[in-house]
Length: 138
Image (cartoon, rainbow, N blue to C red):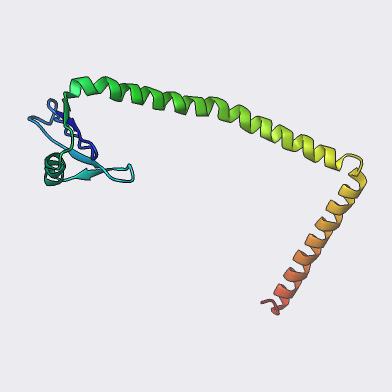
């Protein structure tokens, strides 16, 4: 049986069949901030005694709702995957177009800048290796 309690919510679900036989009950309480936390049987009974409204249903009646939630979750995941790829491609394309627009007409300066940076890096590596070979490196 599933029990919904208000202002607190307590859910009791028996599970039968398969490896588990007999009735198994789990109690959940809705906290004041809206989160659902597992509760003891005593806490569930206390909520009922405090005047919470009790609504009972069977697991068979609850299963279609759970199945519907699972389908919506699956559809949301598929939508994310369906739209994430094109969004990434569009973002990369826009970034390329923006960079190309900023650098257009400055090709000579860019090539010179990369060349100077590469030569400076080679110089630093050469000097470090030379000092290291002598034994004065840090």
